[in-house]
Amino acid sequence: MLKNDMSVLLQTRGLSISFGGVVAADGIDFELKQGERLAVIGANGAGKTTFINMVTGYIKPAAGQIMFDGKDVTGLSPRQIVQHGIGRAFQLPQLFLEQTVKQSLELAVAARANKMKLFKPLAECVSSEEIEEMLEMVGLSARAHDLCSSLPEGHRKLLDIAMALALHPKLLIMDEPTSGVASNEKHHLMATIMKALDERKVTAMFVEHDVDIVKEYATRVTAWISGRITADGLPSDVLSNEEVRTVILGH
Amino acid sequence: MLRIFPWFIGALAIFLGLYFSWMKTPLIIGLSYGFAALGVSILIRAGQVSFGHAGFTCMSGYAMVAALKIWPEIDGLILILISGLAGLIAGGIVGLFMMRYRGIFFGMLNLAMSMVLFSLLGKFYHVTGGTDGISFDRPKLLGQLLDRSNYETALLVLCAFFVVITCSLVQRFYASPTGQALIALKSNEVRLEYIGISAKKVFYKGYVASATLCGFAGGIFALVQGLVTPEMGYWVSSGEYVFIAVLGGTYHAVGAFIGAIGFTFLKLFAAAAMTGAWQLVIGSVLLVLIFVAPNGLVAWLRKFDRKTSHAQK
Image 1 (cartoon, chains in turn orange, blue):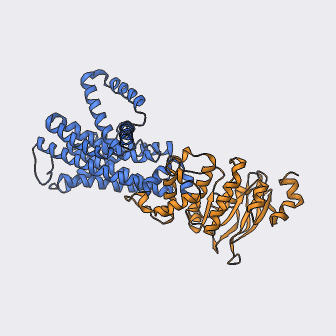
Image 2 (cartoon, rainbow over the protein chains, first blue to last red):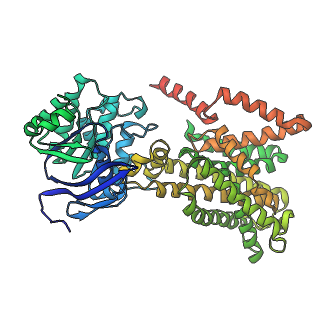
Image 3 (spheres, each protein chain N blue to C red):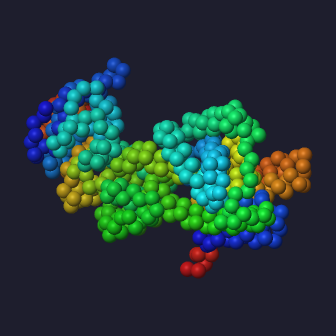
C-alpha cells in the first residue's frame, strides 16, 4: 500500500509494461503534487504517452500500482478514471466532428452532472452561463455554433482541452498541447490554458517538446529516456542535466 | 417547417385513405414500414446499420397474435401497444449482446439473429403455423367490432395519430443528451468514454428504442393483414427498412415516414406499370434520388426550410 500524503495527487509505484521486446515503462515510481505544473520531456518512444495511457486507463499496466487522490485506480476503465477526477486532452484532438462546439461542451457538462436524460433537450440539461463561460475562457465564443470538423488545429486543441476541463477534473493531463499549432500561436495557446487552470485550481501535467514553453509554464520537469524517468526537478536543473542535454535536447 | 411535416403526413394519409378507399391498406402498410425504418434510423445516426431489424417486427407480430389467442376480447389499440412492448423487451435482451459490436459485425449479427428467428418460426409448425403463419379474425378496435372498411379507416387514423406522437417523441430523444451522445458515438467513441459517458450504455438505449419502434410496426402490419408469417422477418424486409431510412433521411424523424410512403407507392405503381420489371423502375427512381437528394428526402426539404428561414431574417 502506498502512503497517503494529502498533498500528493497522483502516485505510481513500479509501473511496468512492454510491447514485444520494447520496454515502454520500466518500473516507474512517480509522484505529482497538488498545484504542480509538470512538463514531461523525452524523445519519441521514451514511453511518455504509454505512461499517460496507463494512468488514464486506456491500457492496463503489466505490473505496478496507480494511486489517485488517495484511491487505487489501477486497471480501471477510462470512464471510471474520468469520474475519479482525471481529465485528458489528446495529441490528436478527439472531437465530436459532426456536432458543434457548443454541443460538445454541453455533452461534457451533462455527463459530469449526470444528466443523461432521454427526452429533455441537451441545452436545457446544462446551465447556459457555464457553457458561455467555458467558451469565453478558451476564446471559442464566436465559433460556438460551428461544426467541430470546421475548426482549425489551434481551436481543436483548445476545444479538446475545454471538454476535459468541463468535467471539473482535479488533474488535467495533456499530451503535446502545442503540437500541430503554428509556433507564433503556441505561447498564446499555453497562456490561455494556464489561465484556465489557475482559475479552476487544476493540477496539470503536459508532454512538451518546446524548451521555451517548458521553461515558461512548468514548475517542474521530468525527463524520460527508454521507459524510465532520468531526471526530475526544477526546469532549470533538468534542462541543464548532461544526459538530458545529449539524449533529449540533442546538444 | 419540418415540425409540421408529421401532421402533414398524417393528414395526407387520412385524406387519401378516405378519398380512395383502395389506398387504405397500402397506406397503413407504408406507415408501418415507416415506424420500423425510424427505428433503423436511430441506429444509423449512431453510424450503425442493422440488417436484421425485421426480426423484431416479426417477433412482435407473433407476440401480439399470442396475446390475441389468450384474450380474444382484447382491443386492437392494446394489441398495438403490446407489440411495442414485445419489441422493447426483445430489444432489451438482444441489445445486451449487440451493444458491444460495431460496423460490419453489428450488421451481420443482427442479420444472423433475424434468420435464426425466421427458420425457427418456419420449423415449429405446431406452435407457429410454419411458413403459412397464423391468421386471425379482426379484433375489436376502439371498443367496437367493425366491418373491413371501417376497421381499416380506424386503423389508418390511429396510425396517423401515432406518426405525430412518435415523431414528436423521437425528435425530443434526438435533441436530448442521450440522443446527442448517439451522434457523438458515430464520430468519436474514445472521447465519449473520456468525458465519462459509457458508449455501450448509450448504444443500448438507442438499440432498445429502435427495437420498440420495430415492434409497433409489427403490430400494425399484422393487424392490417390479419396474418403473421415468418416472411415478415426475412432479411429482405430488414434491407427495405435500411433502404427507406436512407431514402427518407435521418436528419428528422419524419424522414422515415416520407421515405416509407414514397417507397410503398413507388413499388405499387411500378408493379402496375411494368409488372415484369418493377425492380427496374424502383432502381432507376432510386438512382435519380441518390443524385438529387444524397442525404435523403428530408435533408432536401431542409434546404428549402433554411432558404425560407433566411429570407424571413
